[in-house]
Image 1: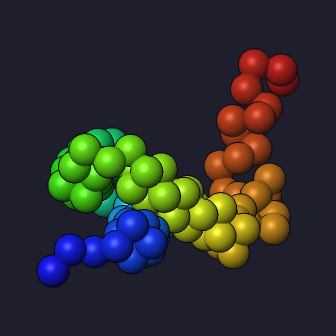
Image 2: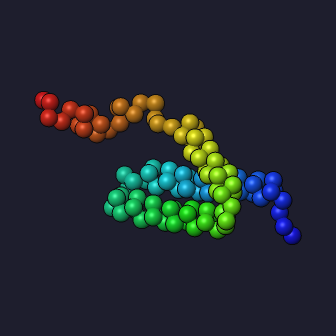
Length: 109
């Protein structure tokens, strides 16, 4: 059964949104745990490559030869980024995090 254009675009939007939730959700989880990991740079790099491989692979399967599907899926993906950034955002008092004063005051005193 073939999907109509509207149904295919709606499905692309839903899949793009789910990919955004996966990508940015796992990024958020890894970043929150970086201070507890033995090799945080390795973890961030490896999970970044895995996240990117999954998202790009599924985008490639989704798009096929239709650029419209890619555009709609990317819109859903980026909408998740905007929503999560506004919802989770930075801590209200990011300037007072432990260690921040050491980075700011280097070399001056």
